Length: 139
Image 1 (cartoon, rainbow, N blue to C red):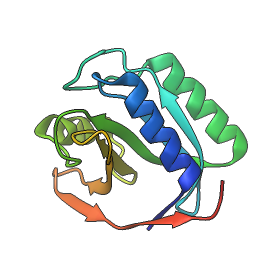
Image 2 (cartoon, rainbow, N blue to C red):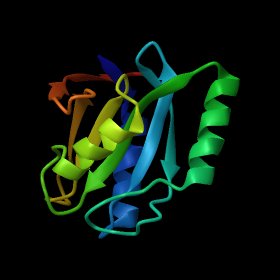
Image 3 (cartoon, rainbow, N blue to C red):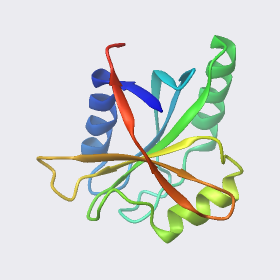
């Protein structure tokens, strides 16, 4: 079960609101399924319907994560006008990424005053499983 602090949840919601009306994206890193850091990554697609992480920022996050002895736990992105559920494009991107052991965190701003955050696993066949997450006291 992914454990994430209120501070990290607030960070990703703020990132989603900042990038609105385009989707935001980023990486959650840590250890033992506990998020220690959120890396907001630029969406170079600059689109309200899809995201593409900036490759240099992705690489920088990967290096920092490895140097800390942590690992990628989740990729996050926002849906600006739809529910927090993986789209066909999200599933296809997850399958192509090769990251089948990370969580996918979706933030819906369909109701901007009440963001919806949900967590999923997407396997190599494209099967989607919703996962409960725990709000931890870590900051």
